[in-house]
Length: 93
Image 1 (cartoon, rainbow, N blue to C red):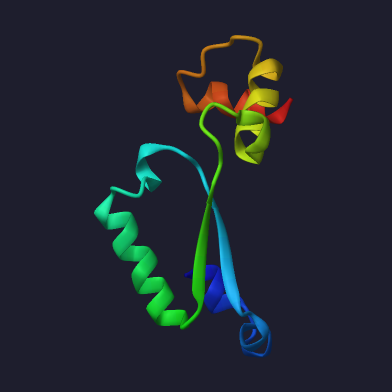
Image 2 (cartoon, rainbow, N blue to C red):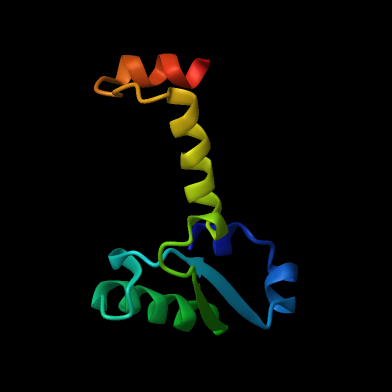
C-alpha cells in the first residue's frame, strides 16, 4: 500500500492493472487466506485489477532477491552471522 499511496494521483489514473512479482514461498501461496485477503483489500482500495506473477519454484536465478542473497553468501564465505556486530562488519566490507 505504501507504494500506491506514494504514487502521484496523475500516475495512478494511467495505471490500468498492477502486476506483482511474488516469491513462490508459503507466505504468498494461493492457499494463504491472510495473503489473499490483503490482495483483495488492495484491489478494492485501488479499483485496479491485480495479476500475481509467481517465480518458478527452485529457480532462484529469476528472483532478484535470491540473486542478491547468493552474491552476499559468496562474499561472506561461510562466516556465521550470529551477532548484529558481525553482520554490520560484513555489510561494511
